[in-house]
Length: 218
Image 1 (cartoon, rainbow, N blue to C red):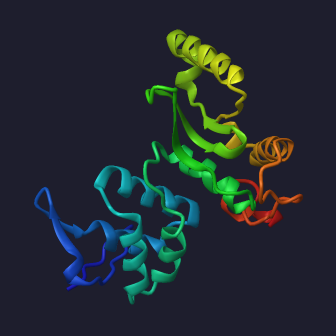
Image 2 (cartoon, rainbow, N blue to C red):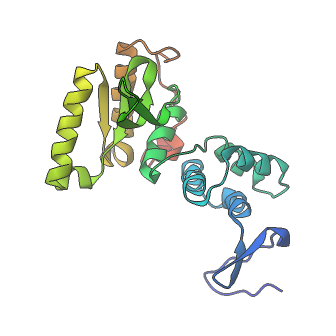
């Protein structure tokens, strides 16, 4: 029996997808993801999916398969997001940055690529990268600017990257929430300059409905 309270919306779900968390009956991870298809936009739903993979051990392929099998009314929207979900994503902002690039028609970057030295030791890791042309795109939050030690490490790391022929594009929160078009143009120019295969001469507008301030221009 559904109870109605102000500020709450009741939904009827598949009881087979219900689990108990800390004594409370809630939707399981995958059913919850599908149900959120009707509550969240594409980018935010991919953020949830990346988190489920990283923190809850959900397999991206199984998430897609579950959305394909589901008869839930929001399964189609969930499936569209599930196809963008990737493993090893460290943060929601990295997800948003990746989605910005992909929805604009740029080739999908590799997530958390590892660079090793001649002996096989890990010397560097990139949030998002185009390995074939040595272009890295990274999100830097306030921590990178406010902590002296982190700032010094970043400068040293950038010097090492320059010596190895890497081009680094650093993106902050403003580059995603306030001026995503500038971010896209920066990455686009870097990829064209390095002659990255598959880079379009003109960016698509598919990203606009999903980022603040640009939906009206879609």
